[in-house]
Amino acid sequence: MCLCAKVLPVGHLWDPDPPVPPGCANPGVGHAVSVRNCQTNGITADDEAFELVAQNWQIRHVATQLCVTASSGDPASARLTLQTCGGANGQKKESTIFRAGYFS
Image 1: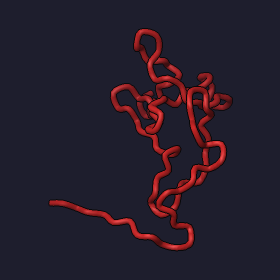
Image 2: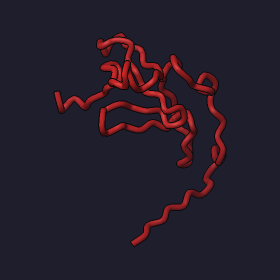
Image 3: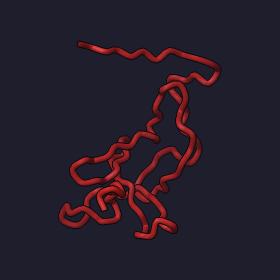
């Protein structure tokens, strides 16, 4: 069985090649992770695509292959930035591991 989806242009906000908002272009190591409205009409902009790495609970930015990293263990004051995913000798850095609360 095959299911197919089709995205059709709707409304005045339709843009099949959405521009990256200011401050989101060319992310790299140290770039701050922030919140903004998602692109409209089912289009995903390069800067907003992340994936959960199930084997190690890291959140990876698809376009750069960098991982979201917390500046500290305090949720109230931690800044989130993009950093390399592996630590020294390929070991995971604790600041890049985001486990769901129901496991603690």
